[in-house]
Length: 453
Image 1: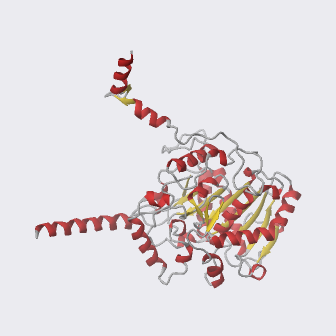
Image 2: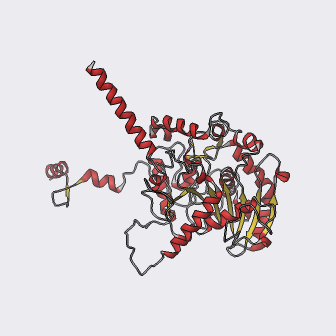
Image 3: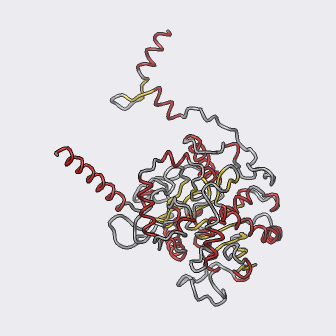
């Protein structure tokens, strides 16, 4: 009797501990070890948000729906709008999009709107057109329906993009952007263009960028890390979509309410080991480099001044579902635009190079290229399926373009041996620290050296 009572207490305590950890988990914990983003790299995000919001307007000269209060569509020049594709033009194949030339920032932008909750075709044709492991692409797995939509848009607009890049000169960048459903399409369009740059006048890889806002999980982990130098994903605090490992076709096709489904998935993934997640090559992830906008803290009411953190994570890539009342509201493009603008203003205001910060923070000393290389090496170390070598990815600017028939980029750096021991591991094997904290050779190494002598 006493044994059974003891087991009951153990089970109750275990369940209570699990419930406490899950219910008190906030989105800020996902990126607490990441360094802060720089204003220069985050500067395009708010204006890209406004370009996407412009797609929802019937008349940009008289916006009435989602114009940001006080700013309107600041930075969006009506004369720069080259083409607007509505549902009448694209039918059920993809969401509406806009082609826009930003002469001020020297960018050719193709932006795609998010999911239309009132339109069944968005569910059936795009989201539901997929099964786990259905579509292989470029050595990994991608979402089949989103890839078809990306191919459809590129077939329609390749000629337009070619002409715009040719007319405006080599200094102009090619930008793909999207929100929610559109973010997955934009990310896969970027992958297609990067592997077929010859069709776009041999545009350098460094001139291609993608901004995926509230990103959908659209590609396997090896591809998400491989293209982190060109794809940037922006997540607002507790947004559910980048964190939900459940395939998109199950999320939006479920008979359950969304909060119930998220709780069930949260309970299931608690007992799933991280190693099993990495070993599944079909598991899809949010693409590219991650930017996390954090504006709420544990046991604090209201919104705090937002801060932006960034990294190219391999483990902990938004794997924990957050059970909060803002899980769905943080997915809205309106809130992402508002908080990203606030965060950018704060970052610019805090730029004082001659004055030391009041609170010391970890600064990012690595360049983007080094950070990308480290992420690729980490993916190989964790045995991520189909993880690419450094020699298979174009890291340096100005590297030679890849022919359309190739699935991997031309080598620009020497491949490193995967079995090579890292410097930290070598130090741990050969040295230890004494009571004074100094490095000393381990005793077994000393004895071996004495025996040899």
